[in-house]
Length: 75
Image (cartoon, rainbow, N blue to C red):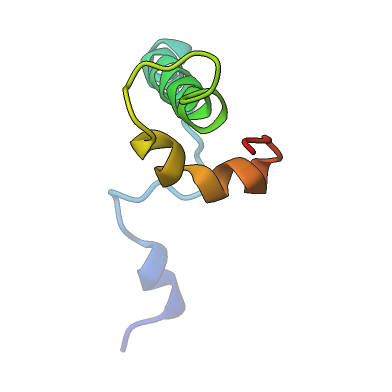
C-alpha cells in the first residue's frame, strides 16, 4: 500500500525550497519583451498617422479596432 507521503517523496521535486532566478537571466528577456511591446504600441497608435513606415492603409485597417479599444483616435 502506498501512503500520501509517497506523492511528495520524489528527489527531483524540491518541496519547500525556492530558487531565485538571477537578474542576469531575466534581463535579456525583459529587454526583448519591452522592445516588442514598444513596436506593437507604435503600430497600434501611430502607424498610418502623421508618421508612417509603410505605404497604403493596410496596417491601419489591421489594427483599427485595437486603436479604438485602447482609446487612440484615428478618424
